[in-house]
Image 1 (tube, rainbow, N blue to C red):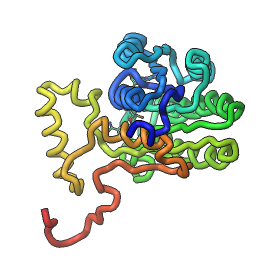
Image 2: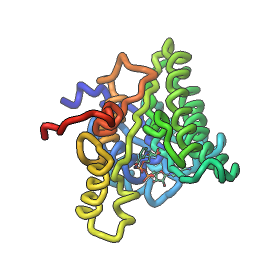
Image 3: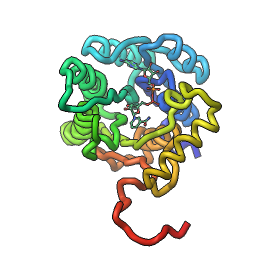
Length: 265
Ligand SMILES: NC(=O)c1ccc[n+]([C@@H]2O[C@H](COP(=O)([O-])OP(=O)(O)OC[C@H]3O[C@@H](n4cnc5c(N)ncnc54)[C@H](O)[C@@H]3O)[C@@H](O)[C@H]2O)c1
């Protein structure tokens, strides 16, 4: 089974791999046989996951060109190459556009878009020279919708999907693929662990919100449910896909809100 992923012994980097969906992505890559570097701004997190999976911790901040390049170069040197890169890092800060503080916009674009550009450029230099690789980035459905109070984040995530399309066109001839996942609201540990209730109750709370919002699958996603598509995009299972975004939303985007009649279940 493992061989269908084509990840055995491949050198892989998970940026933001110290927690949540990044940690799960690192675990999945290791299970599929990859040699994994776990990069995180939080050194304890990077080291904990590295210990869990027999990987290599890399500590740094991807919000500057220098920081992102140092992370990618360190992972490349430690692994003796780099053919797979997952980038998980991102965080929404909500706020009405009319009240925008452009320092906040700067920070949102830096964290959610520029950092992805910096990592792609640093990884691309190695992959173009070594002729091959797969990069998978985390976008968001906020990059498709008019997402109220998320203008900066939505623009950044739309930019990430655009970046994947452009780089896929520029780099396909060198055997490099670049794709994204776009999750809807996901009950990741960052959210559930900060809620003042046991995990099962926190998940039930999220799922009640999803039902009220009309999500066809009647729940919100879990962290592993966008880590798994990331693994697919990094692996040879998606060998003829590039520039694409997989939407992970329990059917929300294909649901016509004005449909009439009851659902069958
Ligand atoms: N949870 C949702 O509802 C949802 C929906 C759509 C998209 N997303 C996207 O999912 C991703 C986050 O996934 P998660 O919540 O599982 O992860 P997380 O935010 O819990 O963990 C991300 C890791 O990245 C590290 N990190 C943060 N800033 C960094 C930096 N500058 N340099 C290096 N490392 C850094 C953190 O220390 C952390 O360990 C983001 O891209 C987010 O936009 C989430």
